[in-house]
Image (cartoon, rainbow, N blue to C red):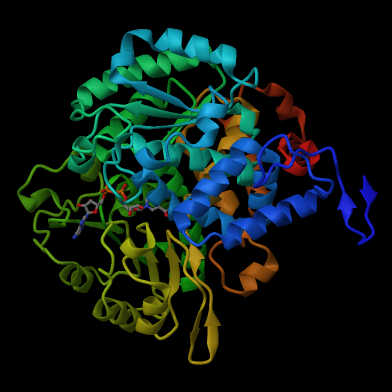
Length: 549
Ligand code: NAD
């Protein structure tokens, strides 16, 4: 490296990878920092979110080192562009932005499998194996796009989510980008707009019945395991009626988990562990109301319920702390409709459970210490409900977790104002800090990205055979324990997102130890390490983009 007359480092090794046509190398390309700075300046000059997304997708395919350096060093700014909320926009517009550059430049960098591929899955994966850039593939995010974020059925547009999550595995969890594989299973779509759209890039036919999708996934999982035996599979954004059976059918046979159910459960549990402690109300006196009883709501509620059991309650005592509300009102066995399987475990079982329809009615009946929204319906935590939560609690817990921002049950500002600044708040999408009566309040973001990169990293490094619930709990506990003294003094529920790689390391260690305890680890070398050695090992294994330039 040399320095020019302005003292700017010159680095001629790099191709002009950002914003210039390939092949023409200007005299001054710049140091690594200049390359990242140039990409950041270009990104900030682009006005539209979707255009910012396509710029970043293009940068990722042309120079993943600069892309991951940029994302890693500007986490707060870039995460909303490569993940929620902008990823939702990308998925909705997938047919227009397809193929993103990374799909055509490296043929093995994304995989679409349609129902017509069923007889050939084994062959397709075997062919793919010859083209993957790394011998050992480590992690795949698999979706059928049937329920993307809170946006419904987006068909093969779900590929955006698989790619976005894997970008975060790399940026936040230090997984090697060449060991990641995004997959979409194209079971058709029930989205009328896509069915009628001649530009739609997926199968233009209605979705298969769930039973046929399950049978397809049985074959897919067996073939994946045969071809890539150590691959961790993250199920993502499957419709609720499919998400639960897929998890239960596969979780003991293969190393897999469902992020909507378990990742959300863990990240909310971690925030709740902090909030319960700050609320100064003992666990046995908590009353927790879930607004929304889909895969996320039920997954979170069951995760917290199991945590209560681990803290010494009996199963029945723990279950009694929970109330669920869905679009028909309070979820109870005596409601008079047939409850789907996933809602039964925590349905109220008292024979005289009142038949309450609206959230306000249920809030008044339950008098919750904690109100959690996973309903996909924005603005449903009204001023009256928030004021009531503030009236009955010294430190009310309000988590408005639906994404994207406009579907959050209430904004941070509304929660702070409604409760007179006493709320302990977390949301799924980011909100800015709020000034209220001369004081600054900071929101928590209960985003799955705190959990899945560390959980995945730990699972990869331990080479787990399966991912039992204890590993998910370990990831939540490690996240809750990862706040610094300074973050605790600021009353934060989650650590600063800029520290995410450090947090992911801590989570990975917690997950590896839990795997060892349950004997589901295959990398037995790690057993002999003490905690400091294990942490150093995890850190050493993490991908660092700048060093690879
Ligand atoms: P889902 O569609 O499976 O479930 C939605 C639930 O809300 C259903 O039980 C439905 O009956 C209920 N509901 C819908 N409208 C209602 C209404 N008007 N009144 C009462 N209940 C109503 O969705 P899901 O997968 O469970 O996800 C829910 C939300 O959680 C999404 O917005 C998603 O973005 C969000 N989420 C957030 C995170 C996170 O940030 N950590 C993670 C996962 C999911």
